[in-house]
Amino acid sequence: MSELRFVDACTEEHFAAMSAIHCRGWRTTYPGFVPDDYLRDVITEDHWVPFFREDCETKRCNGLLLYENDQPVACCTYGPIRSGASPRQSADLVIDSGNYPGWGEVISFYTEPTRTGSGFGSLLLEEALRRLKAAGYPGCTLFVLQENQGARRFYERHGFSWDGTVQLVPFPHDMICHDLRYTQLF
Image 1 (tube, rainbow, N blue to C red):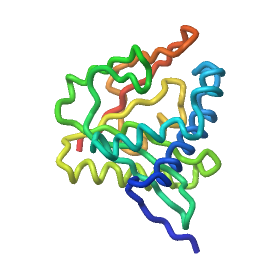
Image 2: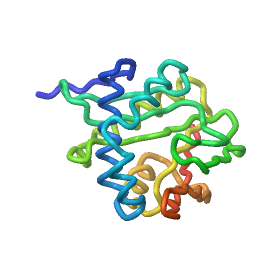
Image 3: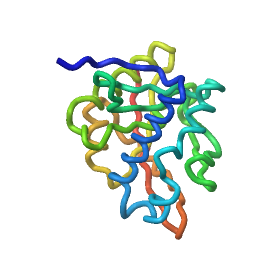
Image 4: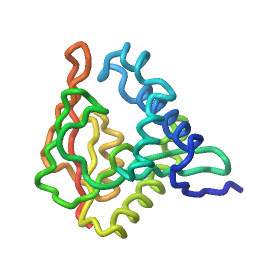
């Protein structure tokens, strides 16, 4: 029988596990939408480690992992909504969250690609939302790639809906991703 547990990311081991899951998620989900050389050269298994470390140290947002026994199977970051420049994602990205003052956000969310469809994502999202609500946020937002129909259906099953916002996310080689803002009022 497997044991499931949530772990707050606070160690180098946690940051490395989250970064590796993010990497595999990007490389599985975004080919054709993000330049291939960007996925190969920038999106490495350790790419996000310094960001997760900094987030933990500064309390900018929270990292959360779901483990099955001793194996991390899904992870997310969540906290106060981002607004303004977001250079971590793209040097030219500016997020306007003026319509959602005081809201929370699920900033990143990935399940180990080989474990998609196993229910781990639902457990993790429900826990992140529970924590945001307990922290007093009136609602939650998140962004999802427009073409990622599976993720859009997943979030809709969990009570999110598209608010009409299309966030343009520039990448090298003049590629632009269209992220949709999904919202849920608690």
